[in-house]
Length: 517
Image 1 (spheres, rainbow, N blue to C red):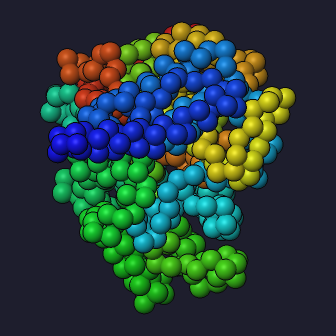
Image 2 (cartoon, rainbow, N blue to C red):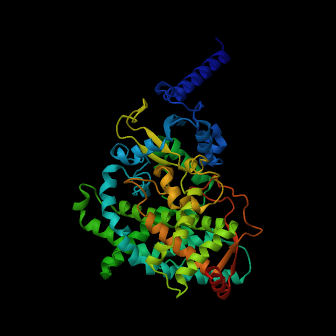
Image 3 (cartoon, rainbow, N blue to C red):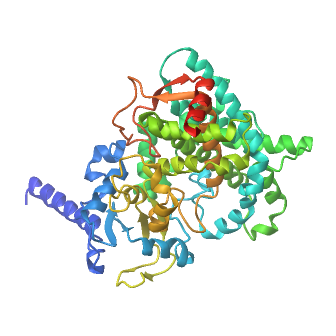
């Protein structure tokens, strides 16, 4: 046998072993009687098997899951693969309810990669394993109660006042306004004031360090996309190389911020009863946490997720609401009428007034229905499990995805899903719909802990803007809406550019009087 023949034999053997290794698990769903698309070696079903898309995140995963959801319209569950990993997509609302609520203890884990050594900031409440998640959730919950929200309301409205002043400066320039950036600055200030007792000055300071860090984390680069892809699809490889990857500037920034803030408060005996103080108390009194060690990195991780989730997800929700109100002037007028009705005897907003604004609530809910921040919700089975009234059996450690984006865009659930219609959330419509068909903040014990805080900061910001300004589309407005496939949350590819103009308060009041008359 010559050299060329030997080389061909080695190559053929290598390819055969390679192919077998990457396809040996691909009968996983078929053997369980669960339908799904045929996977391809290495990449499975995710990213259309395109190496460029895999590395650069050029395809929005929500669109892919929507395609799969619609292709297997009559299936309760669908089996797909992310690389070699089998993932179960659960569509049936009763099965989703079992996962989130009825059998929650069997699906309490989100299945997200968490490692203090490899990624210190990954130890946050969203991703922690059940053993650490339960006591932390219990200890952190008091910061998000209704009574605590009422205490923070004044702080939020002060930030909203600064927002109004900032918009007035922008409006005077008579140029299109990038509303997502405005919302991000406002919400950065809210988070800093309410959670950390820090004046972040994102609205007043164009060189705000906090806003710069926020942009850095959520502005994808080829390096960050590659890091995310390797971590998601090749976790073992990520662990090996993570030792050689220096800590990111974001990690260093938050670690320094939290430790400096805690040390300053300890030295000067400052008590604010906010998020930072709750974490301080947990470290001083670890008995409530069982055998969990409240390390500096664990504390920093909670601050980190509260900050990035609090301003990034909320800023997109707020700017998406403004986008739809600009496109739908009649809805905007109706919402402004409600706002004026509750504020006509004075400009002061209260917690109770916001709570009573029924149409504002409908507009908000329709916004996060059409633009849910996440494409899907993940869970991992804690033991083998057979779904109720089915023959579908899954093993321990099975990854499960709930396709929230696809559910929210299902025309059988939400007729004409691309139409922005707040009346989808009137009492009659809500009662007729399965509760698991609306999941912007998840559901059950492991839902979003800060959802009420997020809702109120967004609503207050919207009220402040619509009280005094009209929002309209302009030449730079992206119509139709294009999703940015590289973004970590559902986001517009080219931002939210709108025209904002001052309205005449006298004309608004006269208009209201005519309608009442």
